[in-house]
Length: 191
View 1 (cartoon, rainbow, N blue to C red):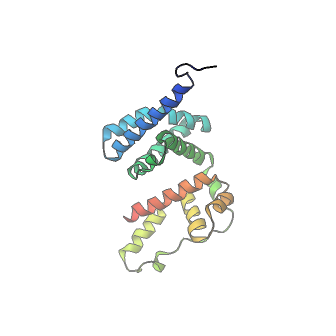
View 2: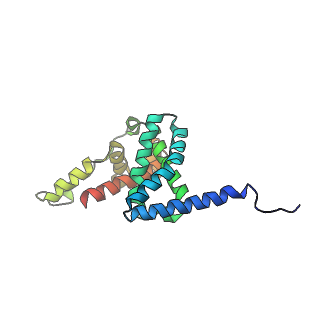
View 3: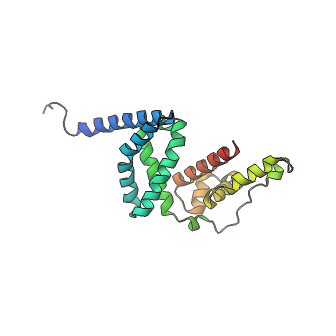
């Protein structure tokens, strides 16, 4: 049996590739500061990302909040060029999935029943009389309770990401994303 010209099965693959290329180009322009590219990317991507999040959460209000989380996460990561490491559509869908999964696990459930090691006091790191101590304390206080717990467990408690995920009953991808967000927030807060 011989095959004729491209069949319908091939079209979605081409369409997905061109969508990924288009999203990547928009993210590049948005990362360079083009506000029209930001708007175009949102218009192009929000329907697909929202439908995935809605499928997971089954709640419109929570899905809208999770979608907002996705775009809050996309812009700084696009400036760092993370979307170029693969397919931009897959990258965005993974961010949307992680945002939805993070909302499935209530914040109160992420607090472990075990004693957490304390965050180090800044007096051990910087001169207590300096204004740096105040900046570090503010940056640490700006983290969510989940981020603080994950930093305590992984950075100061000696647990691996997998062990922290098990301890808090969270998906590994959520733990990695939260630790990354916490470290980025600390970096931004201290910049």
